[in-house]
Amino acid sequence: MIQIRPAGDAALLLEFPAGADDTDPGGNGAARLAAAIRAAALPGVVDVVPGAVTVLVSHEPGRSSAADLVTRLRALADGPTPAPPAATRAALVLDTVYDGPDLAAVATLTGLRPAEVIDRHSAAQYRVGWLGFSPGFGYLTGLDPALAGVPRRATPRVSVPTGSVAIAGGLTAAYPAAHPGGWQLLGRTDAVLWDADRDPPALLSPGLRVRFRPVDRLSGAAPPSRPDWLRESGPIEVLQPGPLTTVQDLGRPGLAHLGVPRGGAADPDSLRRANLLVGNSAGAAGLEVTLGRLAVRFHDAAVVSVTGAPVSLALATESDPGADSGAAPGRGRLDPDEPRHDAAFAVPAGSVLRLGAPTTGLRSYLAVAGGIDIRPELGSRSTDRLARLGPPPLRPGDRLPVGRARSRSDPWGHGPTRTEVLSASAAAVALRVIAGPRDDWFAPAALGTLQTGSYQVTPASDRTGLRLAGPTLARSDSRPGELLSEGVAAGSLQVTHDGQPILLLVDHPTTGGYPVIAVVVSADLGLAAQLRPGQRIRFDVSRASPD
Image (tube, helix red, strand yellow):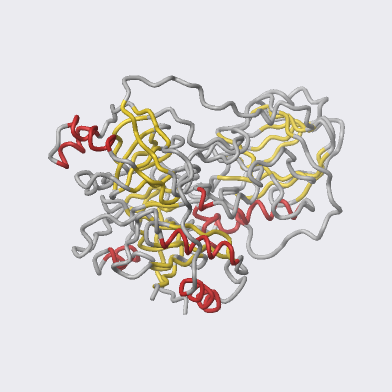
């Protein structure tokens, strides 16, 4: 009987029983079950991600009872599942230069010479078992047994170059884009594995046969060009983008099985609040401003709000000589609404709005009535830098189009504002977590260590996740091997082989192979996304059961 483990309050991990390690792509039971769950369109289910022997089912908390969802999932697991995809295409050949930085280490681990590693890796014929991790990333089965025991790196790299060919945990893959990763790098290919403008965008698909062909050099083909959304005659002109400003909405749910994370605003509650203050739908696109210092000119009159990390706001009219300078502008001849954080205010045509640096927190959100109206990509206007989806980070001179404003609704006043939550934060910010789904991979004392310890956010943190430093979370002696790759939920505390956790945020890989000791509850994810390097976190650990 299939086992169902809670993965926080917004996901369930379905695991096939021991001995059902059916990683052969001709009969991958997890992939077939995932397809059946997606076809069933269960109420509240958002994403369904197969792994080697598991299926991660993400759902909307409170949409339906967890017990009812578990009952429906068990019924699907016990019923017939779709047949695996037939291999209808000839084997895809990926030209590969075997000069990876981990080639020598893999040779040492396996007792082979580097040339033998290359021969064994390139001689095998692989099949795509499933997609995950990042857009277009295919997990390839059929690795030579001599290479199958190679583990992941103790500490994953902050960035793995595009096209890297790698092995770990009995699988091989090629990275479609630069991305954090812990696999061992053998070489590189220039195949375009993901192109959002291609149909289908992923070069790989489940069941496809793949071979790696050793070559001395690659063709050097340029990556596909990306559209330039923001050189239009929109009414909002970027004068100064600050350290990082991107367009964000509520993301791309439902595509995680293709390796596309939900993404969207890192602090979604703050974006929702900003939108509702100006009368937009909660999911309209706005600007996510990291560490403030944004300056934009409004060529048309607008209604605006700024929420999230608290920043000072200054508004100058076109007639003000300080409007384009770095100096603090005075008031122009017009008399706009006084701009206040966490409130809607009017901006006259020709005005320049400047955001200061936040006093606390990391990310502020600017919404304009009508929403930022760039064309959507895969159903969202959000920028995803790792997946290369949506517009790039804003640059001086970018022009942003705005949609038609709706009749304003009542301002959103539910719950404390992010300003109030951040201002009340103690030296160590408390985040609630639910143990599992892989806490049994850790020593009995590990959850106690997580509960009592304090972890610091390191500078190697971004929208993908917070890399934390603190007390080591020791693995169980009974789990010495590698966890087979499986879906991971936003908020997961994924623990690398060095015992340090990574708190996965909105742009996290959709699958991974480091065990997850606990998952941050969905209501606390926005707060986690506001934490800066150097801040400390403590975790309040609880347990939950789906039944």
